[in-house]
Length: 119
Image 1 (cartoon, rainbow, N blue to C red):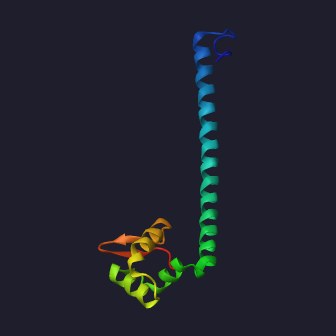
Image 2: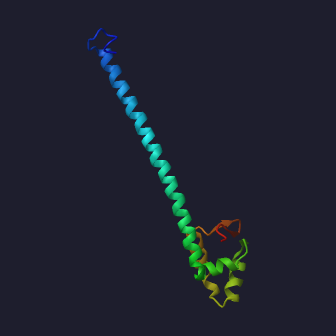
């Protein structure tokens, strides 16, 4: 703009320079934000794999033994039967359900639950 304005600093040239600077900054900001988001997605995927691996190691946990004994879709009666079969307190079924839901191992489905995490 400086050259087009006859090597003089003008209001139009100054506004054009400000606009170009803002556009350049905005584009760099967007590229940087995209790079951060991509890195975060990669880190989330790694964390999820580590969580699954840790869950597999924890299979001796009573919660996972209970989960393994349940069918893919189950009701309150199913979980109470599994608890009774394993000589565990049947009244504690709601605590187990809350813990499994909190760990995203199961989810509500209609009047029962469905396993999210099977392995």
